[in-house]
Length: 121
Image (cartoon, rainbow, N blue to C red; front, side, top):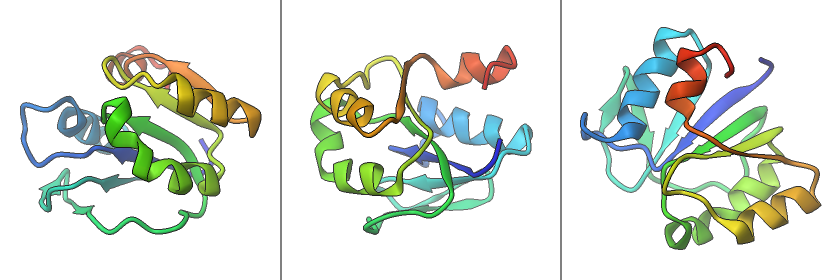
């Protein structure tokens, strides 16, 4: 993979799937950054709470926010021009998916954890 994964909705709570995903990404030696609302550290990385206009060299956004909570991140996601967006279960968003497809961004409705475990990531 060329570029990094952005875990959107990262949480310092070890019971959250975004937390598990961050640890799996680290264990798989993937390049990743964490963005969320609560400060904390996961897999040795700080959760970034400030939302930039765009992030360089993004391959994938993996979504752990419900559709309503994703709206403020639309500019960040679309301006960053990722190769794909993974909508994890519960994070599906037809509006963002439609905007992404119009910009040539691949939309995947799947579980990042399963994708990593099965070598499909």
